[in-house]
Amino acid sequence: MIQKNSTHDVTFTDLTHDAMGVAKIDGFPVFVKDALKGEKGQIKIIKVNKNFAFGKLLTLHEPSPFRKKPICEHFDTCGGCNIMHMNYEMQLSFKKHRVKETLKKISGISPPIGNTVAMNNPYYYRNKAIIPFGEQDGRVVAGLYKSRSHEIVDLRRCHIFPKIYSDIIRAVKALVIEHDIDVYDEETHDGLLRAIMLRHSESTGDISLTFIMTSGKLPKKEIIIQSIVERFPVISNINVNINQDKTNVLLSSKSKTLYGKDEMKDTLLGIEYTFNHRSFYQINPAQTEKLYRAAIDLADLKKTDTVIDSYCGIGTIGLTAAKHVKAVIGFDVVKDSIRSAQLNAKNNDIENARFIQGKAEDVLPDLKSEQVDVLFIDPPRKGCHKEFLDTVIAMGIPKVVYISCNVSTFARDTSILNAGGYKVTSVTPFDMFPQTSHIETLALLTK
Ligand SMILES: C[S@@+](CC[C@H](N)C(=O)[O-])C[C@H]1O[C@@H](n2cnc3c(N)ncnc32)[C@H](O)[C@@H]1O
Image (cartoon, rainbow, N blue to C red):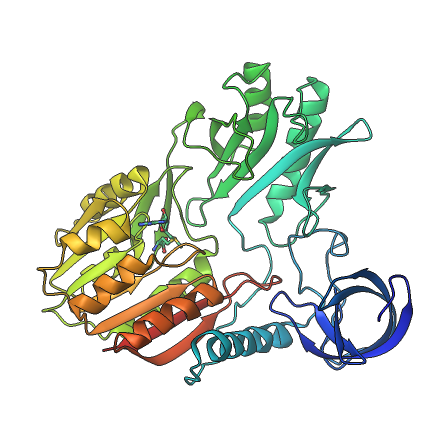
Protein backbone atom coordinates (compact mmCIF):
# COMPACT_ATOMS: atom_id res chain seq x y z
CA MET A 1 0.00 0.00 0.00
CA ILE A 2 1.30 3.42 -0.98
CA GLN A 3 2.05 5.68 2.02
CA LYS A 4 1.35 9.37 2.50
CA ASN A 5 4.59 11.46 2.49
CA SER A 6 6.59 8.71 0.77
CA THR A 7 8.71 9.81 -2.22
CA HIS A 8 9.00 7.97 -5.54
CA ASP A 9 10.78 8.29 -8.89
CA VAL A 10 8.10 7.95 -11.57
CA THR A 11 7.36 8.29 -15.28
CA PHE A 12 4.15 10.08 -16.29
CA THR A 13 2.24 7.99 -18.81
CA ASP A 14 -0.96 9.98 -19.30
CA LEU A 15 -2.90 13.16 -18.46
CA THR A 16 -6.30 13.35 -16.75
CA HIS A 17 -9.17 15.40 -18.25
CA ASP A 18 -8.08 18.35 -16.10
CA ALA A 19 -4.44 17.95 -17.18
CA MET A 20 -2.91 16.30 -14.12
CA GLY A 21 0.01 14.00 -14.89
CA VAL A 22 -0.73 10.29 -14.27
CA ALA A 23 1.98 7.97 -12.94
CA LYS A 24 1.51 4.38 -11.78
CA ILE A 25 3.30 2.99 -8.72
CA ASP A 26 2.91 -0.82 -8.72
CA GLY A 27 -0.19 -0.32 -10.87
CA PHE A 28 -1.72 2.25 -8.43
CA PRO A 29 -2.53 5.56 -10.19
CA VAL A 30 -1.15 8.78 -8.75
CA PHE A 31 -2.28 12.18 -10.06
CA VAL A 32 0.24 15.00 -10.01
CA LYS A 33 -0.42 18.67 -10.84
CA ASP A 34 1.81 20.32 -13.48
CA ALA A 35 3.42 17.07 -14.69
CA LEU A 36 3.31 16.26 -18.40
CA LYS A 37 2.98 12.98 -20.26
CA GLY A 38 6.40 11.46 -20.99
CA GLU A 39 8.17 13.29 -18.15
CA LYS A 40 10.20 11.62 -15.38
CA GLY A 41 10.47 13.08 -11.92
CA GLN A 42 10.43 12.60 -8.18
CA ILE A 43 7.08 12.97 -6.40
CA LYS A 44 5.86 13.03 -2.82
CA ILE A 45 2.51 11.41 -2.01
CA ILE A 46 0.22 14.01 -0.42
CA LYS A 47 -3.13 12.17 -0.25
CA VAL A 48 -4.12 8.52 -0.58
CA ASN A 49 -7.65 7.45 -1.56
CA LYS A 50 -9.01 3.92 -2.04
CA ASN A 51 -8.34 3.69 -5.79
CA PHE A 52 -5.87 6.51 -6.47
CA ALA A 53 -3.54 8.98 -4.79
CA PHE A 54 -2.40 12.56 -5.29
CA GLY A 55 1.26 13.50 -5.43
CA LYS A 56 3.34 16.67 -5.58
CA LEU A 57 6.14 17.11 -8.07
CA LEU A 58 9.43 17.57 -6.17
CA THR A 59 12.05 17.36 -8.95
CA LEU A 60 11.72 17.02 -12.67
CA HIS A 61 14.42 14.63 -13.95
CA GLU A 62 13.39 14.64 -17.63
CA PRO A 63 11.16 17.51 -18.78
CA SER A 64 8.92 17.13 -21.82
CA PRO A 65 10.01 18.93 -25.03
CA PHE A 66 6.46 20.38 -24.98
CA ARG A 67 6.95 22.04 -21.58
CA LYS A 68 6.90 25.84 -21.47
CA LYS A 69 7.72 28.25 -18.65
CA PRO A 70 4.34 29.77 -17.65
CA ILE A 71 4.28 33.53 -18.22
CA CYS A 72 2.16 34.03 -15.09
CA GLU A 73 3.71 34.54 -11.64
CA HIS A 74 0.57 33.04 -10.04
CA PHE A 75 0.51 29.82 -12.09
CA ASP A 76 1.64 27.58 -9.21
CA THR A 77 -1.17 28.65 -6.91
CA CYS A 78 -4.01 30.14 -9.00
CA GLY A 79 -6.83 27.89 -10.21
CA GLY A 80 -7.61 30.11 -13.20
CA CYS A 81 -5.22 28.46 -15.68
CA ASN A 82 -3.99 24.89 -15.42
CA ILE A 83 -2.13 24.19 -18.68
CA MET A 84 0.12 27.21 -19.05
CA HIS A 85 3.08 24.85 -18.57
CA MET A 86 2.28 23.19 -21.94
CA ASN A 87 3.38 24.92 -25.11
CA TYR A 88 0.48 25.95 -27.33
CA GLU A 89 0.97 23.09 -29.78
CA MET A 90 0.58 20.62 -26.92
CA GLN A 91 -2.45 22.43 -25.49
CA LEU A 92 -4.20 22.00 -28.84
CA SER A 93 -3.32 18.32 -29.24
CA PHE A 94 -4.23 17.65 -25.57
CA LYS A 95 -7.74 19.03 -26.24
CA LYS A 96 -8.20 16.98 -29.40
CA HIS A 97 -7.08 13.87 -27.51
CA ARG A 98 -9.51 14.60 -24.65
CA VAL A 99 -12.46 14.91 -27.04
CA LYS A 100 -11.51 11.64 -28.74
CA GLU A 101 -11.06 9.74 -25.44
CA THR A 102 -14.22 11.14 -23.85
CA LEU A 103 -16.42 10.23 -26.83
CA LYS A 104 -14.92 6.75 -26.86
CA LYS A 105 -15.35 6.26 -23.10
CA ILE A 106 -18.81 7.80 -22.57
CA SER A 107 -20.60 7.28 -25.89
CA GLY A 108 -18.60 4.38 -27.30
CA ILE A 109 -18.06 6.14 -30.63
CA SER A 110 -14.88 7.06 -32.54
CA PRO A 111 -15.85 9.66 -35.15
CA PRO A 112 -13.11 11.54 -37.03
CA ILE A 113 -11.99 14.51 -34.91
CA GLY A 114 -10.60 17.65 -36.55
CA ASN A 115 -7.56 19.50 -35.24
CA THR A 116 -8.32 22.00 -32.47
CA VAL A 117 -8.93 25.43 -34.01
CA ALA A 118 -6.22 27.62 -32.50
CA MET A 119 -6.25 31.23 -31.37
CA ASN A 120 -3.71 33.61 -32.94
CA ASN A 121 -2.67 35.13 -29.61
CA PRO A 122 -3.81 32.72 -26.87
CA TYR A 123 -3.59 35.32 -24.04
CA TYR A 124 -5.66 38.32 -22.80
CA TYR A 125 -8.82 36.96 -24.40
CA ARG A 126 -11.31 36.52 -21.55
CA ASN A 127 -13.76 39.44 -21.73
CA LYS A 128 -15.59 38.53 -18.51
CA ALA A 129 -14.02 38.23 -15.05
CA ILE A 130 -15.59 37.61 -11.66
CA ILE A 131 -13.06 38.48 -8.96
CA PRO A 132 -13.93 37.51 -5.38
CA PHE A 133 -12.78 39.77 -2.54
CA GLY A 134 -11.84 38.51 0.93
CA GLU A 135 -9.51 39.05 3.86
CA GLN A 136 -6.38 37.07 4.70
CA ASP A 137 -4.40 37.80 7.89
CA GLY A 138 -6.16 41.15 8.21
CA ARG A 139 -5.34 42.17 4.61
CA VAL A 140 -7.88 42.68 1.80
CA VAL A 141 -7.25 40.29 -1.08
CA ALA A 142 -8.85 40.06 -4.55
CA GLY A 143 -8.20 37.48 -7.23
CA LEU A 144 -9.15 34.03 -8.42
CA TYR A 145 -9.55 30.95 -6.25
CA LYS A 146 -6.80 28.38 -5.80
CA SER A 147 -7.71 25.20 -7.65
CA ARG A 148 -10.23 23.01 -5.76
CA SER A 149 -10.60 25.62 -2.99
CA HIS A 150 -12.19 28.91 -2.07
CA GLU A 151 -8.92 30.43 -0.95
CA ILE A 152 -8.31 33.63 -2.92
CA VAL A 153 -4.98 34.12 -4.71
CA ASP A 154 -4.23 37.85 -4.38
CA LEU A 155 -3.85 38.75 -8.04
CA ARG A 156 -1.19 41.17 -9.28
CA ARG A 157 -1.48 40.45 -13.00
CA CYS A 158 -3.56 37.99 -15.01
CA HIS A 159 -2.61 36.99 -18.56
CA ILE A 160 -5.96 35.71 -19.81
CA PHE A 161 -8.02 38.82 -18.97
CA PRO A 162 -7.57 42.04 -21.01
CA LYS A 163 -4.45 43.74 -19.60
CA ILE A 164 -6.42 46.67 -18.17
CA TYR A 165 -8.41 44.32 -15.87
CA SER A 166 -5.39 43.80 -13.60
CA ASP A 167 -5.08 47.60 -13.17
CA ILE A 168 -8.82 47.99 -12.50
CA ILE A 169 -8.82 45.15 -9.93
CA ARG A 170 -5.86 46.71 -8.09
CA ALA A 171 -7.46 50.18 -8.21
CA VAL A 172 -10.78 48.89 -6.83
CA LYS A 173 -8.92 47.01 -4.09
CA ALA A 174 -7.06 50.21 -3.14
CA LEU A 175 -10.40 52.07 -2.91
CA VAL A 176 -11.91 49.29 -0.79
CA ILE A 177 -8.98 49.59 1.63
CA GLU A 178 -8.96 53.42 1.60
CA HIS A 179 -12.70 53.68 2.32
CA ASP A 180 -12.73 50.78 4.74
CA ILE A 181 -15.39 48.80 2.85
CA ASP A 182 -16.19 45.58 4.61
CA VAL A 183 -15.33 42.52 2.52
CA TYR A 184 -17.39 39.35 2.68
CA ASP A 185 -16.43 36.32 4.79
CA GLU A 186 -17.74 33.09 3.26
CA GLU A 187 -17.55 31.19 6.55
CA THR A 188 -19.43 33.63 8.79
CA HIS A 189 -21.56 35.16 6.01
CA ASP A 190 -20.58 38.62 7.34
CA GLY A 191 -19.44 41.59 5.29
CA LEU A 192 -20.57 43.54 2.26
CA LEU A 193 -18.39 43.15 -0.85
CA ARG A 194 -18.30 39.61 -2.25
CA ALA A 195 -16.75 40.20 -5.67
CA ILE A 196 -16.55 42.46 -8.67
CA MET A 197 -17.43 41.52 -12.22
CA LEU A 198 -15.82 43.08 -15.29
CA ARG A 199 -17.09 42.73 -18.85
CA HIS A 200 -15.46 44.17 -21.94
CA SER A 201 -16.67 44.85 -25.46
CA GLU A 202 -14.03 44.21 -28.10
CA SER A 203 -15.65 46.45 -30.70
CA THR A 204 -16.46 49.54 -28.57
CA GLY A 205 -13.71 49.13 -25.95
CA ASP A 206 -16.32 49.81 -23.21
CA ILE A 207 -16.05 48.08 -19.84
CA SER A 208 -18.86 47.37 -17.38
CA LEU A 209 -18.03 47.05 -13.66
CA THR A 210 -20.43 45.36 -11.23
CA PHE A 211 -19.99 45.25 -7.45
CA ILE A 212 -21.50 41.99 -6.17
CA MET A 213 -22.55 42.76 -2.59
CA THR A 214 -24.81 41.57 0.20
CA SER A 215 -26.67 44.90 0.12
CA GLY A 216 -27.49 47.44 -2.61
CA LYS A 217 -25.73 50.32 -0.82
CA LEU A 218 -22.19 51.04 -1.96
CA PRO A 219 -20.56 53.15 0.79
CA LYS A 220 -18.97 56.44 -0.39
CA LYS A 221 -20.70 55.81 -3.70
CA GLU A 222 -20.01 59.22 -5.33
CA ILE A 223 -16.30 59.33 -4.40
CA ILE A 224 -15.73 55.73 -5.47
CA ILE A 225 -17.52 56.10 -8.82
CA GLN A 226 -15.75 59.36 -9.55
CA SER A 227 -12.27 57.98 -8.85
CA ILE A 228 -12.95 54.87 -10.95
CA VAL A 229 -14.27 56.65 -14.04
CA GLU A 230 -11.65 59.39 -13.84
CA ARG A 231 -8.88 56.85 -13.83
CA PHE A 232 -10.56 54.44 -16.30
CA PRO A 233 -12.74 56.42 -18.73
CA VAL A 234 -13.41 53.15 -20.65
CA ILE A 235 -15.65 52.09 -17.74
CA SER A 236 -18.98 53.21 -19.14
CA ASN A 237 -21.28 51.45 -16.69
CA ILE A 238 -21.18 50.59 -12.97
CA ASN A 239 -23.79 48.35 -11.26
CA VAL A 240 -24.48 46.75 -7.92
CA ASN A 241 -25.66 43.15 -7.92
CA ILE A 242 -27.28 42.12 -4.66
CA ASN A 243 -26.63 38.60 -3.44
CA GLN A 244 -27.48 37.68 0.15
CA ASP A 245 -27.55 33.92 -0.41
CA LYS A 246 -25.06 31.44 1.03
CA THR A 247 -24.10 30.18 -2.39
CA ASN A 248 -21.19 29.59 -4.74
CA VAL A 249 -23.08 31.32 -7.55
CA LEU A 250 -21.89 34.88 -7.11
CA LEU A 251 -24.13 36.77 -9.55
CA SER A 252 -27.80 37.02 -8.57
CA SER A 253 -30.70 38.23 -10.70
CA LYS A 254 -31.12 41.42 -8.59
CA SER A 255 -29.16 44.45 -9.83
CA LYS A 256 -29.26 48.23 -9.94
CA THR A 257 -27.27 50.62 -12.05
CA LEU A 258 -25.17 53.30 -10.33
CA TYR A 259 -23.48 54.90 -13.33
CA GLY A 260 -24.04 54.96 -17.10
CA LYS A 261 -26.43 52.70 -18.96
CA ASP A 262 -26.65 48.99 -18.13
CA GLU A 263 -26.06 48.07 -21.72
CA MET A 264 -23.10 46.75 -23.66
CA LYS A 265 -22.70 46.60 -27.42
CA ASP A 266 -20.44 44.30 -29.37
CA THR A 267 -20.21 43.21 -33.00
CA LEU A 268 -19.80 39.61 -34.16
CA LEU A 269 -19.63 38.75 -37.88
CA GLY A 270 -21.10 42.12 -38.83
CA ILE A 271 -24.11 41.99 -36.48
CA GLU A 272 -24.29 44.45 -33.60
CA TYR A 273 -25.51 43.02 -30.29
CA THR A 274 -26.83 44.88 -27.28
CA PHE A 275 -27.01 43.08 -23.94
CA ASN A 276 -26.79 43.79 -20.23
CA HIS A 277 -24.35 42.62 -17.57
CA ARG A 278 -26.49 39.58 -16.56
CA SER A 279 -26.89 38.01 -20.01
CA PHE A 280 -24.69 35.22 -21.29
CA TYR A 281 -22.19 36.38 -23.91
CA GLN A 282 -19.32 34.27 -25.26
CA ILE A 283 -16.10 35.14 -23.43
CA ASN A 284 -13.66 34.93 -26.37
CA PRO A 285 -14.95 37.04 -29.28
CA ALA A 286 -12.15 36.18 -31.78
CA GLN A 287 -12.77 32.44 -31.39
CA THR A 288 -16.56 32.92 -31.26
CA GLU A 289 -16.51 34.36 -34.78
CA LYS A 290 -14.54 31.32 -36.02
CA LEU A 291 -16.90 28.97 -34.18
CA TYR A 292 -20.11 30.56 -35.50
CA ARG A 293 -18.76 30.72 -39.06
CA ALA A 294 -17.87 27.02 -38.88
CA ALA A 295 -21.26 26.15 -37.33
CA ILE A 296 -23.12 27.93 -40.14
CA ASP A 297 -20.95 26.21 -42.79
CA LEU A 298 -21.49 22.83 -41.16
CA ALA A 299 -25.27 23.30 -41.20
CA ASP A 300 -25.17 23.86 -44.99
CA LEU A 301 -28.19 26.16 -44.71
CA LYS A 302 -30.75 26.65 -47.49
CA LYS A 303 -33.03 29.61 -48.22
CA THR A 304 -36.03 27.34 -47.59
CA ASP A 305 -34.84 26.13 -44.16
CA THR A 306 -36.50 26.66 -40.80
CA VAL A 307 -33.86 26.71 -38.10
CA ILE A 308 -34.05 26.46 -34.32
CA ASP A 309 -31.46 28.20 -32.12
CA SER A 310 -31.94 26.45 -28.77
CA TYR A 311 -30.20 27.89 -25.66
CA CYS A 312 -29.87 31.04 -27.81
CA GLY A 313 -28.68 33.58 -25.21
CA ILE A 314 -28.95 37.02 -26.85
CA GLY A 315 -29.65 35.36 -30.22
CA THR A 316 -26.15 35.37 -31.69
CA ILE A 317 -26.20 32.03 -33.56
CA GLY A 318 -29.77 32.39 -34.85
CA LEU A 319 -29.24 35.97 -36.02
CA THR A 320 -26.01 34.94 -37.79
CA ALA A 321 -27.93 32.15 -39.54
CA ALA A 322 -30.99 34.30 -40.37
CA LYS A 323 -29.79 35.72 -43.67
CA HIS A 324 -29.19 32.21 -45.06
CA VAL A 325 -32.63 30.74 -44.20
CA LYS A 326 -36.39 31.24 -44.33
CA ALA A 327 -37.06 31.41 -40.58
CA VAL A 328 -35.30 31.24 -37.20
CA ILE A 329 -36.87 30.36 -33.85
CA GLY A 330 -34.72 30.90 -30.77
CA PHE A 331 -35.34 30.19 -27.09
CA ASP A 332 -33.55 30.68 -23.78
CA VAL A 333 -34.56 30.50 -20.14
CA VAL A 334 -33.23 33.99 -19.24
CA LYS A 335 -35.76 36.78 -19.76
CA ASP A 336 -33.12 39.53 -20.17
CA SER A 337 -31.40 37.50 -22.90
CA ILE A 338 -34.63 36.99 -24.86
CA ARG A 339 -35.44 40.69 -24.60
CA SER A 340 -31.94 41.43 -25.98
CA ALA A 341 -32.34 38.83 -28.74
CA GLN A 342 -35.61 40.47 -29.86
CA LEU A 343 -34.01 43.92 -29.75
CA ASN A 344 -30.95 42.66 -31.62
CA ALA A 345 -33.15 41.27 -34.41
CA LYS A 346 -34.97 44.60 -34.68
CA ASN A 347 -31.82 46.78 -34.54
CA ASN A 348 -30.20 44.72 -37.30
CA ASP A 349 -33.35 44.71 -39.50
CA ILE A 350 -33.68 40.93 -39.23
CA GLU A 351 -37.35 40.13 -39.71
CA ASN A 352 -37.34 36.34 -40.03
CA ALA A 353 -36.25 35.53 -36.45
CA ARG A 354 -38.49 35.16 -33.40
CA PHE A 355 -37.45 34.43 -29.82
CA ILE A 356 -39.32 32.72 -27.00
CA GLN A 357 -38.51 32.75 -23.28
CA GLY A 358 -38.60 29.38 -21.56
CA LYS A 359 -36.72 26.20 -20.78
CA ALA A 360 -35.57 24.33 -23.89
CA GLU A 361 -37.22 21.15 -22.59
CA ASP A 362 -40.56 22.99 -22.27
CA VAL A 363 -40.47 25.10 -25.43
CA LEU A 364 -39.37 22.48 -27.97
CA PRO A 365 -42.38 20.16 -27.41
CA ASP A 366 -44.62 23.17 -28.22
CA LEU A 367 -42.89 23.42 -31.61
CA LYS A 368 -43.55 19.79 -32.57
CA SER A 369 -45.81 20.79 -35.47
CA GLU A 370 -43.07 22.95 -37.10
CA GLN A 371 -41.14 21.50 -40.03
CA VAL A 372 -37.62 22.10 -38.68
CA ASP A 373 -34.61 21.49 -40.95
CA VAL A 374 -31.70 22.39 -38.68
CA LEU A 375 -31.38 22.55 -34.90
CA PHE A 376 -28.51 24.41 -33.22
CA ILE A 377 -27.90 23.26 -29.63
CA ASP A 378 -25.59 25.31 -27.39
CA PRO A 379 -26.42 24.33 -23.80
CA PRO A 380 -24.72 25.30 -20.51
CA ARG A 381 -22.05 22.99 -19.02
CA LYS A 382 -24.64 20.59 -17.61
CA GLY A 383 -25.78 19.77 -21.17
CA CYS A 384 -29.36 19.10 -22.31
CA HIS A 385 -32.37 17.85 -20.40
CA LYS A 386 -33.32 14.28 -21.44
CA GLU A 387 -36.84 15.45 -22.35
CA PHE A 388 -35.38 17.99 -24.79
CA LEU A 389 -33.31 15.28 -26.53
CA ASP A 390 -36.31 12.91 -26.63
CA THR A 391 -38.31 15.66 -28.36
CA VAL A 392 -35.49 16.23 -30.91
CA ILE A 393 -35.62 12.50 -31.71
CA ALA A 394 -39.42 12.45 -31.89
CA MET A 395 -39.43 15.46 -34.23
CA GLY A 396 -36.86 13.75 -36.47
CA ILE A 397 -35.01 17.01 -37.20
CA PRO A 398 -32.60 15.99 -40.00
CA LYS A 399 -29.53 18.03 -38.92
CA VAL A 400 -28.33 18.88 -35.43
CA VAL A 401 -25.37 21.21 -34.93
CA TYR A 402 -24.20 20.79 -31.33
CA ILE A 403 -21.90 23.37 -29.73
CA SER A 404 -20.63 22.28 -26.34
CA CYS A 405 -18.44 23.75 -23.58
CA ASN A 406 -18.30 20.45 -21.69
CA VAL A 407 -17.18 17.40 -23.59
CA SER A 408 -18.47 14.95 -20.94
CA THR A 409 -22.10 16.13 -21.13
CA PHE A 410 -21.75 16.42 -24.91
CA ALA A 411 -20.72 12.74 -25.01
CA ARG A 412 -23.64 11.78 -22.74
CA ASP A 413 -26.15 13.69 -24.92
CA THR A 414 -24.61 12.24 -28.07
CA SER A 415 -25.26 8.71 -26.74
CA ILE A 416 -28.95 9.56 -26.34
CA LEU A 417 -29.18 11.06 -29.83
CA ASN A 418 -27.21 8.12 -31.21
CA ALA A 419 -29.70 5.65 -29.76
CA GLY A 420 -32.45 7.77 -31.36
CA GLY A 421 -30.98 7.34 -34.86
CA TYR A 422 -28.46 10.20 -35.07
CA LYS A 423 -24.91 9.69 -36.30
CA VAL A 424 -22.03 12.01 -35.40
CA THR A 425 -20.49 12.95 -38.73
CA SER A 426 -18.08 15.72 -37.74
CA VAL A 427 -16.39 16.86 -34.52
CA THR A 428 -14.00 19.81 -34.16
CA PRO A 429 -12.61 21.24 -30.91
CA PHE A 430 -12.26 25.03 -30.76
CA ASP A 431 -9.78 26.66 -28.42
CA MET A 432 -12.12 29.08 -26.73
CA PHE A 433 -10.32 28.89 -23.36
CA PRO A 434 -6.51 28.84 -23.97
CA GLN A 435 -4.23 28.12 -20.97
CA THR A 436 -7.07 26.17 -19.32
CA SER A 437 -8.18 22.58 -19.86
CA HIS A 438 -11.72 23.69 -20.85
CA ILE A 439 -12.78 22.63 -24.33
CA GLU A 440 -15.37 23.96 -26.76
CA THR A 441 -16.57 21.43 -29.34
CA LEU A 442 -18.55 21.80 -32.56
CA ALA A 443 -20.28 18.71 -33.95
CA LEU A 444 -22.73 17.74 -36.65
CA LEU A 445 -25.22 14.94 -36.05
CA THR A 446 -27.43 13.75 -38.87
CA LYS A 447 -30.55 11.60 -38.76
C1 LIG B 1 -23.49 28.30 -23.47
S1 LIG B 1 -24.76 29.53 -23.42
C2 LIG B 1 -25.05 29.76 -25.14
C3 LIG B 1 -25.68 31.05 -25.52
C4 LIG B 1 -25.63 31.44 -26.99
N1 LIG B 1 -25.94 30.34 -27.87
C5 LIG B 1 -24.30 32.06 -27.34
O1 LIG B 1 -23.52 31.51 -28.15
O2 LIG B 1 -23.99 33.16 -26.82
C6 LIG B 1 -26.08 28.60 -22.78
C7 LIG B 1 -27.39 29.36 -22.66
O3 LIG B 1 -28.36 28.43 -22.19
C8 LIG B 1 -29.28 29.11 -21.37
N2 LIG B 1 -29.97 28.06 -20.59
C9 LIG B 1 -29.55 27.39 -19.50
N3 LIG B 1 -30.42 26.42 -19.16
C10 LIG B 1 -31.44 26.48 -20.08
C11 LIG B 1 -32.64 25.73 -20.29
N4 LIG B 1 -32.98 24.74 -19.48
N5 LIG B 1 -33.41 26.07 -21.34
C12 LIG B 1 -33.07 27.10 -22.16
N6 LIG B 1 -31.96 27.85 -22.00
C13 LIG B 1 -31.15 27.54 -20.99
C14 LIG B 1 -28.43 30.12 -20.63
O4 LIG B 1 -29.23 31.20 -20.19
C15 LIG B 1 -27.41 30.53 -21.72
O5 LIG B 1 -27.84 31.68 -22.40
